[in-house]
Amino acid sequence: MLLKVNKFNANFLVFSLFVILFILQDFFFNVLQDSPLPLAASLIYLPHGLRVLATLIAGSKILVGLFMGHFITGMYIHYSNGLSAFFTDPTIVLLILITSTISTFCVFVSIKLLKRLDNRLQEITLRTIILVSILSALINSLFVNFTYYLFIKDWSINNQIFQYFIGDIIGGIIIFYIIKNIYKNIRCLEKY
Image (cartoon, rainbow, N blue to C red; front, side, top):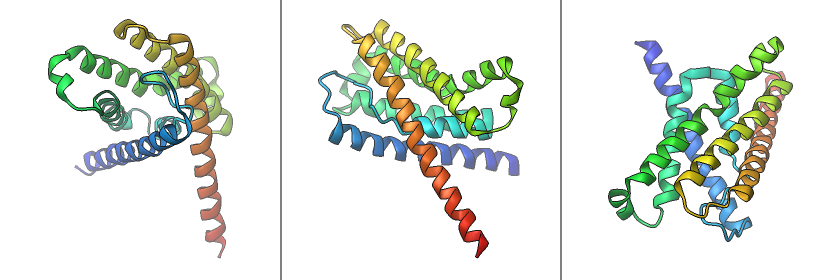
């Protein structure tokens, strides 16, 4: 029973942090990035850093929390003007389910691919974090944008692939930097 509670707590924590980081990212997007593209990707996507670190640390145990974070924020993006289209256009819900699944598993797939290429990736090092972050950003960008291209008429796939990739990388770097400094400050406090 204790194991189930811990899995629930880890998933709830990842879900909550994902939504909080998405809200921060959405604020930056609205303030700093005035994009003429509908559903444009943010150039600072903070949840990618959480996606990478949570998956590296907990593996498949947190996939439910990540999926729920992606799904809820996807619902927000597509239905922020009201839920009336939710009941009239089921393809949007299908689109959200597919892209949420891709975004949830992109880090997990990246880890598996990289471990096949290099056995040194068993430990969580800066090199591992960077490699997984870049590969998962690329996988996410390509597959999510291909899905949008199939579902949404006039999808600007070239611009969006680049924006998704850059947004994931910049967001990941910001989160990694914040976590590193929190860890460093905690270590300094432990000395006293």
